[in-house]
Length: 452
Image (cartoon, rainbow, N blue to C red; front, side):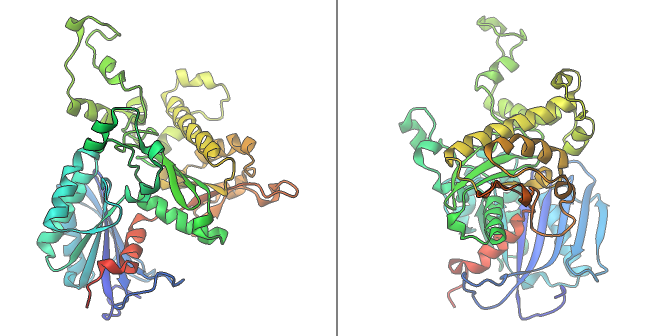
């Protein structure tokens, strides 16, 4: 179905706002409510659009209809885009003028919101819910603010369209209390909501569902170790189909390092990092007053592998990491090798921990996210290291061909490597899709539909 066909369908827009990017997918959905038990896909992709480098103009705008025959594909730089609101406005203008789709046909707009606090399910945006999400922005400084600006723009431009917030934190509401709690005064923790929330939940929900279909197993029976590896990176362990633990915590800063995030550090590191003496000292006169905002800026925006190598492009880091050199001391001379080895080491920490939490009963280890789906070298290194845990041996051919088949889930381990009489654990790669996950949930959740 092309963007101009079938006017008897609702249009559902999924909007995913990053710190300097905006990803948009437009779907067609039936007018009637669907049964969630139906095996047919409830939505049909019509087109995708992405705007990158919003905070570093000129922004780059792409517009690609799903139809192979479509001729309206666009890829250009736009000087007029200065923020997320103007980026969304440009998309709507192009949608109407170039793709001939009336924006008023859009009935639902799904917004990915990184931090949802104690929200356990999607919520329709009202004045009350908008302000509640606004209060949570300090806990996800790179993302919640961007999402709110797009939500505000949607309400202004499409007031009759229902905007719905989908939270990355909701997937992890099943994490047990002892896992989610920090070893601090529990009275203060409860009053201020200081606990592990976890993130990348929409991605993990999609991966969980896709892997269940691939393995032909009931979702609630699966035990998985999931790796969402990108500029923002995290790990998650699923036990019996529910999130048991995840690497990110109160905010997305904890856990694995990212492009500009430090990941888990000694909490006192930031004070020594900013000490004027450049060394540990107890002399108050040598200390520098470092505010929370400044500390967050350093750890969220001025750390990660960019601080080590000067680039956020993990592909470039891998290219210059001299991975063919088995001498690990090369990292002391090559910052790219240091960044690569450091990232791999932290990933292995979580895999080992989660393997124990599942008592070794693991159906699959799954790579996802931009790096997880593209980095042949990182998948190879991690896969070789987990063989000792009973995972199938990596197939170099399969690993090198990831993405060429177009399948959502692909296996990179070799089925022939199963132990005799015992099925070894599998290693998979999943092409995750947070926009599709939101659209599906929107269409299948009857609470979000009008009562008439």
